[in-house]
Image 1 (cartoon, rainbow, N blue to C red):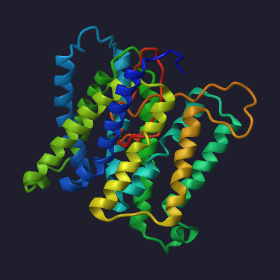
Image 2 (spheres, helix red, strand yellow; image 1 turned 90 degrees about the vertical axis):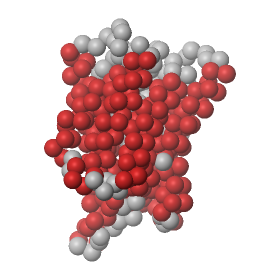
Image 3 (cartoon, rainbow, N blue to C red; image 1 turned 180 degrees about the horizontal axis):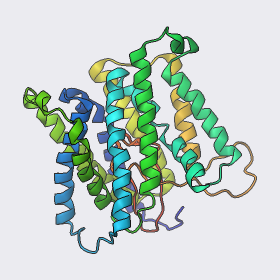
Image 4 (cartoon, rainbow, N blue to C red; image 1 turned 90 degrees about the horizontal axis):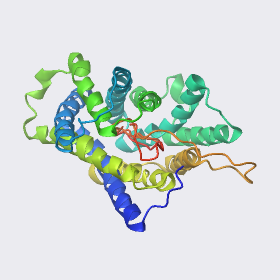
Length: 349
């Protein structure tokens, strides 16, 4: 983590920006559901409107100059984009089968996938502490999911179980995008996000059903909002905040997203979690913070650097993140900070 001392006013501005971004992330599910479009149609048009908005932003800010893009970096960004756009599709599918609240919390298992993939693909060290946090998160996941052995023996709601599977698959895809996009260094994250949403247009074209869009009418506004608000404005705020805040504060503020998502789900659709599910939420949140901030159990035996991963899915996310991040992001990216510091947050974005 960077030891640079940031002015208090700079951190305050960054905290306000990230808080605003996370609140916007929390409203993502409402935009998806209220649009009335199928998940793949939602993601397709999110990519279309998001690409236009991000492209104009990058043009106005002069980000196309001295972009430092190489064929290899473009290829890595594009590969990460494959996983990020399908991550959105699976997350949005899970909204329909479970609820925004349950899908969002389950989706926030993203950072644990990142840890496991890092160990599997890049031989990152898996300590006992990390294993312990993974165990805590798994217990939390079981509680939040609200399923039992009998549910898998034909006695449960198959649609609900499928929705949980979609949320977990979305988290895995987000994690894959994270570990891949992490390798795209020296490039403005806005450009990485632009590459990924532009890729999503031809990638999702075969899955889009335009005949279903003719009767949307005013609901097109929700899709435009997903592109302008949740794919451009939200990520501009996030990337600006990342440069102003220490990792610890980013990791904590990232959990505004699931909190707002659950509040919106309850206020708009009347969905709430049971007491047993509510007990699992702090376990997942605590484990995610433990992974991100390098917390240990009991006495710290030796100096162990905090776990560091890139931010939610190069674009989101989430709606995804959840993401991410990490946590997770679904929303939904690699973030190029001044000192090259990387973090993971939850994003479904």
